[in-house]
Amino acid sequence: MSRPSPLAISVGSVRRLLKEETTYRTELTNQEARLRRWESEGDGEDDETTGNREWAIKQEQKQGIQETKAIFGPLRDKLLSAVAGLEDLLSSKQAEQLSEDEVKEARELITRAKAG
Image 1 (cartoon, helix red, strand yellow):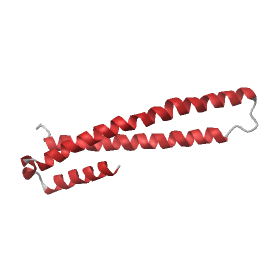
Image 2: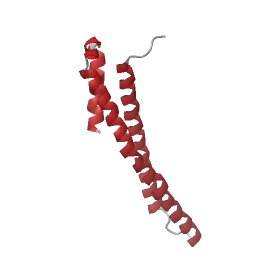
Image 3: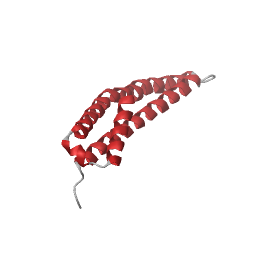
Image 4: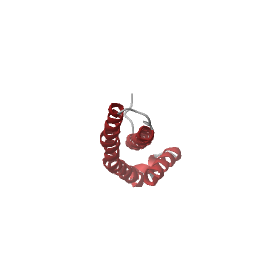
């Protein structure tokens, strides 16, 4: 089996990081929706149930949402670094040996990464 080309490795890395970013954004949206639902529930509950719900809300805010938000900075840095590597590869002499489809896919990924 032949080794993957540097372009294939770079494209795969950018693609994986974009997918990871999308996954975390979906997770954050779901966590925020769950938090809103919990905050709106609870009418007619006794004090103990209300206390448990309030604790769950605080945990969701502190642990879930804050931890998910903290991931975006380092993830974005990794993605931009991978994009820079891909751009360098496309501007090198090796790019002359690449197929038009490979270059097109790489440029599309670069555009998606920079837009997000």
